[in-house]
Length: 125
Image (cartoon, rainbow, N blue to C red; front, side, top):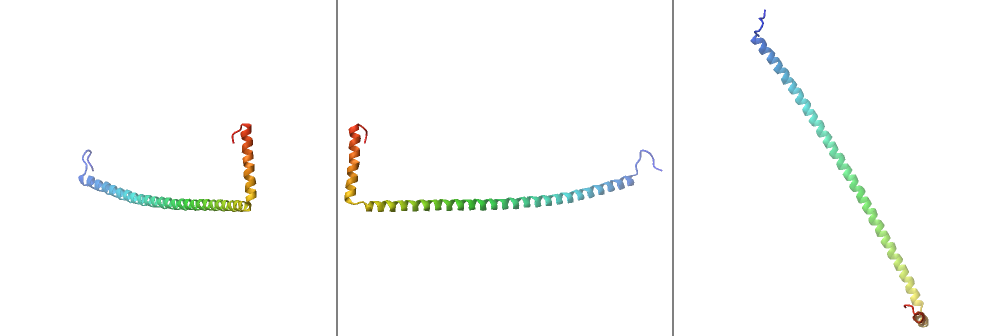
């Protein structure tokens, strides 16, 4: 029979060893859980990085496409404007080539008459 107040040292040691073994087992379990959580976190971070990189590539591709389309539109509008200016210049060149000396002389007199009439009325030329 056990006496009250006095513990059996062998029993106490056995209980302590059992508790220590349980704590060590718990620590090992927690460490394994922590390692698994770290691996999952690494996978999540890697997946997030890959997705961010993919989004960045898609955005850069979209931006390059927009830039290319804008450049093409500007070049097309520039070319159309240049062609229009050339066409207008050719038309005006033909019109000027069609003017003979008599026609130019007549236009010069007409302009002078208009200016003189304005001066007579007191208007600015």
